[in-house]
Length: 149
Image 1 (cartoon, rainbow, N blue to C red):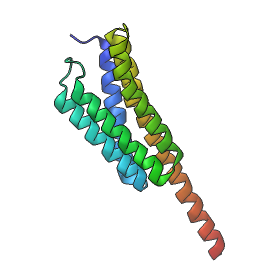
Image 2 (image 1 turned 120 degrees about the vertical axis):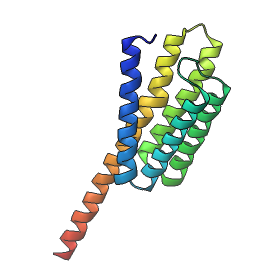
Image 3 (image 1 turned 90 degrees about the vertical axis):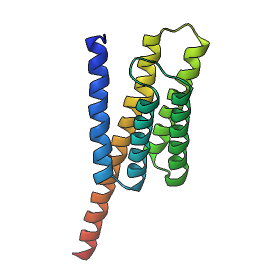
Image 4 (image 1 turned 30 degrees about the vertical axis):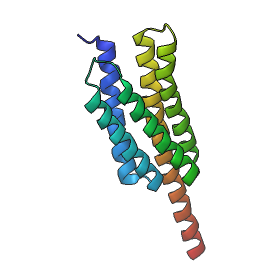
């Protein structure tokens, strides 16, 4: 049976991720929409290949690696600050898999660090990207209105 803190950590993360991804799809720019789709695909695939309480396997490592490559591609192609940070956070998530295997850290430490870097941190980067896009869009709109007045 799951501990209530773990349950809160998981469910609040799922709600936050879904909210930010929907927001990025509706109100974000193209890099935000691509990042959101990447996150949703990675989330769905991870849940498909690794049912709850079974622990991560090699397929989850490959999914996380694919997400890192996707965010790295976004960073190289679009050159937005949030994409660089998202790629770095996802790289940390990939590294967590290998560090866990190479050390004696317990599953709780591993799950917490993996959940933070591959979950919360990347979602926060995506939210930052949407906020930044909306700010830039507003600035361009105000600049265009000032030129037209």
